[in-house]
Length: 294
Image (cartoon, rainbow, N blue to C red; front, side):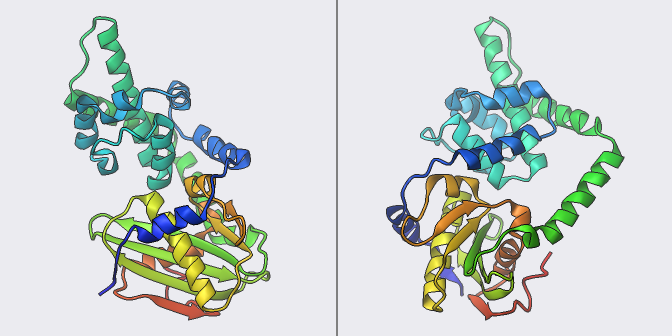
């Protein structure tokens, strides 16, 4: 059997870390945000600081999110701000799903404003139907050729990406994958030398469920402890979790920075491999199974 999840490790991580406000990291996120293929009016809506309760947590909006099957939005989380939800969702969802979520959020907000102006708003089912149809309309506006070119470029960058990152000796890449269907979390970590050769790799399965942010935070803590146990001092940590890098920075252990998912391919594949395991697996200087996992 795999290990059972505990949030104690995450709490320990929080106690070890201090807040970090990185303008450079946020700038990277905003560039990605403005590249989402939805109408500009919806992106402008996403840039604001709308009422999170009205868009996400009230009874009416909860019905919409349940119909759209965005399970991570089900349940009242009033402490999370509107911008916080978008940041969290951008890491949890693929670009297409994130675009659908933005359209739905904008639709809920628009329907809410109808009440203010004495108009009748759509029902949750009508909002679900309209937002899904509108997404298809927006998506179909882009030609098949554009989509193929985009997919080919993305695939090429994913294969070559890690070689483009400047690696220092003993650089730790970490990532996490959450499978809600199997109630399992996969943690992945890989340590590279300055010549980009693998020094060590780890796939660690955990039973249970965590939020994506807590899973990423736990991957960082587990990766650091594992590196210490095998005697490799970490000088730099790279994660594709923007919120993790934004909120935490290790002052005495190492430098932590954000890296795009395309530069974190190996650690990401190790998380997927971990979801198929019952017990932890680690390798020194090579990765026989997980590196080429699709």
